[in-house]
Length: 408
Image 1 (spheres, rainbow, N blue to C red):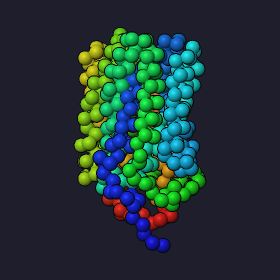
Image 2 (cartoon, rainbow, N blue to C red):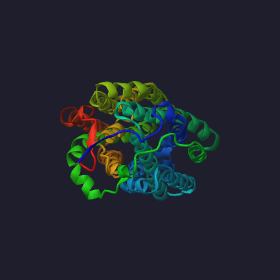
Image 3 (spheres, rainbow, N blue to C red):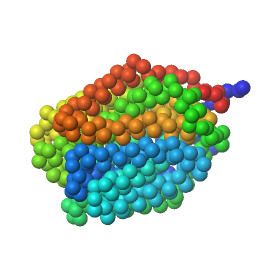
Image 4 (cartoon, helix red, strand yellow):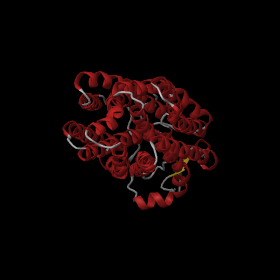
């Protein structure tokens, strides 16, 4: 059996600049819309009569939707290609956002959050698969951290756009922003030609879910544990911050500002983080990312004003920025040539178990103890995850640059 180097298909040499219009621009547009909606989800659920615990569940269902759809998304991308899959994603997102506007009960609202997660799962998996296909290993960290950075720039702009829309049209204004930008992003996606062909058909050869789990068990139990910890921390940040802000008397506009300032610091770090991971290894950025976010959540219960909450938000933003798309980079590094899309679907499933489970942990601990105890619990989980990454995860940058085609 011959060796086959993992790299881009024949054609122009891929660079970050060559992906700007076809990958990064539509991702930015979508991310601005998402950034407008995320800060108000928990508060919207509360406005519909949900308890604090049920509001946490509503936020968690967005992650559950993403988790449930990760493996089907991988199969969809492998079958129809990245662009057609993203058209499906846009339809799911718009349908869910319209549903959020018309929902009159917290249960129905939570259902639409689930559908929204399904749409985002397809979108992100399609982008991850494409960039993994066309970018060489030595640029992959920067390419994927830039993808994450573009999402963070959208996360910075989105809350401020959402704050303006909420002020003008109420909470529904944030959904209108996301609907409009989702449609614009889809138009841009189809208007700009892809500069590079993705891997040949062997790169998307079908692979059964059981085979993926069996052949890559060790990777999923070590690196996957780190991805899960990051998912828990990132999702809980989106639940704990707005609910704690509400508990100390801050309104929706103030919450949007807290998220926006946190995202401002977050987005400044994406390229340096990618450069460091390409030169010195993925663990060098993954461990500080997890540790700082864990510490930030441990500090949340100690805040009692807008200023102190902003300070903690900046700690969380700094930690998250250090790990700009580190989960996607690790998945791309460990992905095999055969069954790449299916493996990445399973990889996202592992990470999204954390994304979905984190808010449920918050809801459960808050219901039995307090919101402060929930934040402390999640921070502790994060510290444990950081230790697992440091001591148990193999460094993928030290792996051989070639894979045996069809092998594990």
